[in-house]
Image: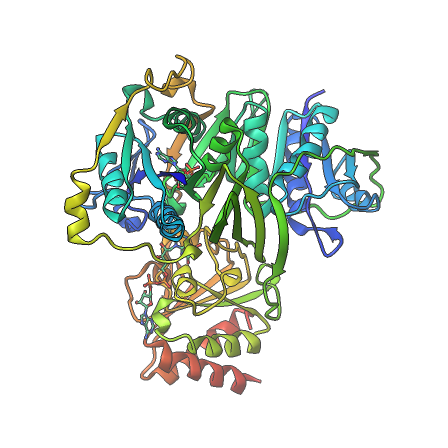
Length: 320
Length: 267
Ligand SMILES: Cc1cc2nc3c(=O)[nH]c(=O)nc-3n(C[C@H](O)[C@H](O)[C@H](O)COP(=O)(O)OP(=O)(O)OC[C@H]3O[C@@H](n4cnc5c(N)ncnc54)[C@H](O)[C@@H]3O)c2cc1C
Ligand SMILES: Nc1ncnc2c1ncn2[C@@H]1O[C@H](COP(=O)(O)O)[C@@H](O)[C@H]1O
């Protein structure tokens, strides 16, 4: 029977939040007639329960292999076996280090296509139809598949996860297929943890090229710290070596949807917006009143950040 | 070492949103007036990566391939001016509006036709459709392993050590040649072609191959045979209702912003 398979990922031994977003997307497709929802996860069988509570009808657990970044070929072994076992005609995964490789790899092995970085998915005439962002976020494309299996990667935060339901039940099956892995992972180095994870933060303060000086990121961190948030950066700032790439917000960086996003000296190029336009409230600090970030903001201060940000830090401290 | 670099000509991805327009009926982007197309930003970095490997090895040949309209010659010329040796333009009316999957197939046929290729270098994604699938596609078609999103690499004989950028850190991997590697912006600035090299590049050969030269089947090229059908293309709406925070001094503006944020219960 056709259905949707999601490729779950884990972080620190638990199911990653994005995998719950995939399950919610798959459940919505099931409601439109796409069939049951199954999930593939690599690791312990105990991971299956939370996938079921979040919407899976069946879980395939691969204890032999991994779905780690850099191991796409190994992971494809389990993923292709799970597609077969579940009879899935839709496969969803995250737009992550794993999905960026696994999606295209599976597509070419199954003689079909993958739509990368989808914003929304729907069933139309029994087939998947996806909206995806392209041209750096300037345009949206709607796409459908010619091949039998329809593969899509989902942009993080595009879909809200469902609340866990402990009364849900589902089957758990072991899958021990591991693909031949020609790329040898020598070492993986986690980015230096800089406080709250960008993706989880309710407040994000990001700095751009207009800061003009790497040490200004200390000011960004001070403001973020004061607001209990995380610090991000534009790619221009990261490319200059002012801030680590793991903190980059945008198309080729992180997707964030905080309650408050403070963009300091960032012009608001579409590729940056692609990572933060889902923020509930945007504050722009920029010298240029016509720049895009000011246009899309809820509040904007049009001034030199060097004068505004220190004063803002003082003003916030004075509030309490 | 025989290296192939794939480069794509695209509309300038830094085109301001205000000048970005779409023909919804034709499902195409309308070229912005006065903004010339550019080489996909990651692709000169792939060329740079090839040149560094060639320089380190002291030998090797770099062939640049681009699939596109005649204007894609400029993308090839740019790579030749950076120092690549030869170019191949894949050009055929049947290549118009094909998708990334068909492109990957055509590129892989061209690489087979070149023959004896040790390494294929590509960009991590083309900044028009933002897919990032062709490197894995070319690798799969050729039966090569693929390493994506590289920030640096070294070759030691037939083994390549590659540093990759992950969502949350970095990774070092090893792979035996032949292989495909896709290059990310973290690789660093590509060299800028010097005038002398631009003149030299004019003398380098650029072959032109069509669908028949690549022995593509009728159902492999052509817009109607896309693997991913494009049903619609449009510009998403963003509304603007910004409140500019006033004040007689930056300090007052900052204070007024803090008050607004407190009022909105954001801090
Ligand atoms: C394929 C591709 C992918 C990309 N991916 C990303 C991505 O993931 N993330 C990303 O951010 N970008 C990305 N970019 C780059 C993007 O197009 C822009 O170039 C980049 O976002 C610009 O960064 P910026 O706003 O910091 O710099 P700029 O555009 O240079 O803006 C600097 C701003 O600072 C303001 N300013 C200057 N001085 C001051 C001052 N003293 N006080 C206040 N304001 C000041 C200026 O008015 C200006 O608005 C990508 C580009 C491409 C082609
Ligand atoms: N038409 C093309 N001609 C040459 N190379 C291409 C073409 N399309 C894609 N590529 C290569 O594949 C990479 C990734 O593209 P894509 O998968 O389309 O996002 C690009 O950076 C190029 O190196």
